[in-house]
Image 1: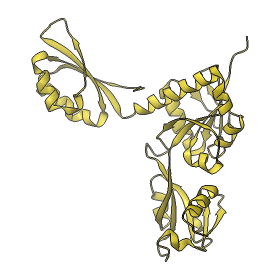
Image 2 (image 1 turned 60 degrees about the horizontal axis):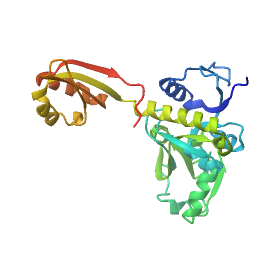
Image 3 (image 1 turned 30 degrees about the horizontal axis):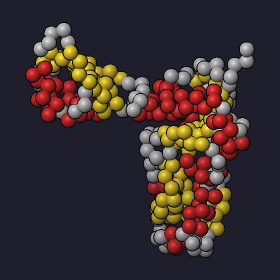
Image 4 (image 1 turned 90 degrees about the vertical axis):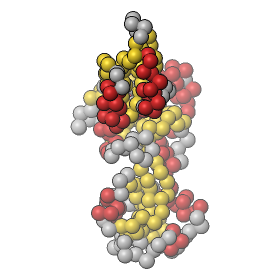
Length: 292
């Protein structure tokens, strides 16, 4: 009997490691050899290929892949007609969106986007940048940059449009941001025809759900504890983070068990306070997924 296969495009380059780590939290182990673009995954129904995020929207739209992980910026750049299944807010640096910014040399007389009239801009996202300029009725030349875009101003171009997640590279190259063109996050996208296939749709939605739940669990922990029933109002009023715990009875009716999900950063202050208020059997545990 022939096994159904789902073809997935995973981003090579800067997002590769973060994406593989996210799949691992979602329950999929991916073994990616540094010299191979066809990583192994512990699901016989999935075939993975590593490819540049810039190209993934186009190939998913064409049906070369059923599912892909790429940025919103590249979907817009390719004007790709794909179905977005979910938004995954992560990048190579962490959980912040990346921004496509217009930047000029610090000493440039260009202060606003209106000052770009008649100027030359270098960028990898030519179509997105041109759309932005047209929307703002600015006539400027936009040329494709093959890389090292920050180094091209002011010697080769007047300004650049570059993706930035922390701003460090912009500042390191003595550039100044004058405008943000767009904010971009990672998206799970599907081919429209593949989405019409019942089996593929169910598989893709399951993967999307698991990835989103794994991302939602980052930075969160579970906390479980036992307290005297009479202490519950005091604990809930003192610790707002525990305002909606799961409450379970214990064999000793004078005691109850509380369980809650909360940000890991708050636990260090909450646990000592719980102990002071009489809590016992306090357990903190990591989370792999949260499904809302």
